[in-house]
Length: 402
Ligand SMILES: Nc1ncnc2c1ncn2[C@@H]1O[C@H](COP(=O)(O)OP(=O)(O)OP(=O)(O)O)[C@@H](O)[C@H]1O
Image (cartoon, rainbow, N blue to C red; front, side, top):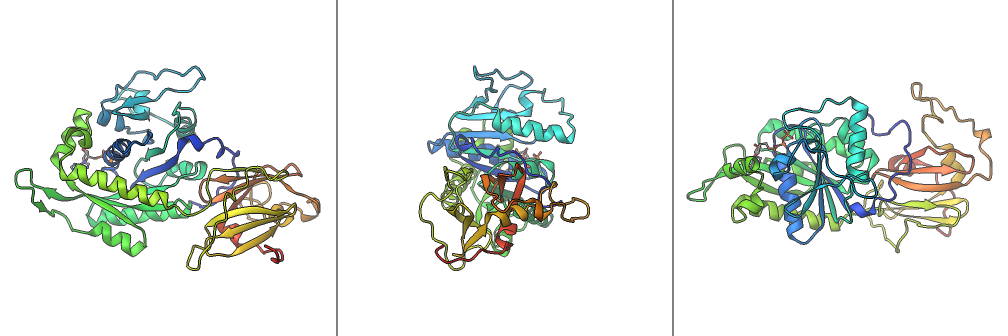
């Protein structure tokens, strides 16, 4: 798996502001309680007054409709503008493959179709104006995760794990994968962390205790909270009425609400460039430099906090560690590593520098997920792609007056 896609994609990051903050719920392993967390989290956020959408991105094994009591096997209706109408359940909007197929008929899809459906679920659904879009990912680190991370400006990922060692090891792999594609880790949730006795309320730790917290500390990511093992959660899943609604007074329901509150604090404090953006270079429209943003010592070297056009030939990137980097726009064009400029197999340059006009300028610069920018240029090149790491490694133009 590579962290840099071979080719750039169209500037689709724009036009997604109505989706609000996009939060993925992921795990390296199945059956750890991801869908249960996604639904309860979405409902807990909605209970705080937020407009929330939930995408069941597990196309092969959708479980969200069952958990929310949504009818399956009936094609959703279309809006007058030709978009798919999401299902409504307990105040949240939901889309799932389960709404298109019967529960007991698993979808059989080839790889490219997975990507097509995911994009449809996000871009062609009539979500209206959302504050949060929660993506319930399938287990593992495969195509779905990569498609979503590389195509959409994810705010970050919540990693779910159970206390067993093997699950925590797998969670660590999931975290690394998200980090490779520059999706920030919003935190770890430890699920089924202890059994709450329904009669006396005492918590017994059946598995190791505190593993999620330890793994979070060792990887330097936040710990969002622990949800106890509660048999009522299984009944709720079967009844189509999630725990935060069916049994709001239980410790597990409280845990879901606390996790939602902690998550909100993390999301609001999100560092980095406000994405998505689509910036017209010529007239400097929609520059991603909304207000003076300061970097700080100890900030990340590869997290941009602002970008602006110093003059027609110089792009300035301000990094979170406080460094201002001025990049000559012809150097930017020459540094392109898309499949048209660098041979994918040999990694040898295909682009002939002499063919790039001295007076070349970008026409447009746009965000790609939370890990790269795309650029088109006045020589007609449309597929420029630059990960933040690549951008930061580029040589700087002289930096006076930055
Ligand atoms: N804290 C909990 N206490 C008791 N049961 C739980 C808890 N969390 C989840 N479960 C149960 O565990 C099972 C798996 O949960 P869920 O479907 O949410 O996992 P998942 O990680 O989304 O699974 P999949 O890999 O199939 O997508 C379900 O039966 C659910 O009701």
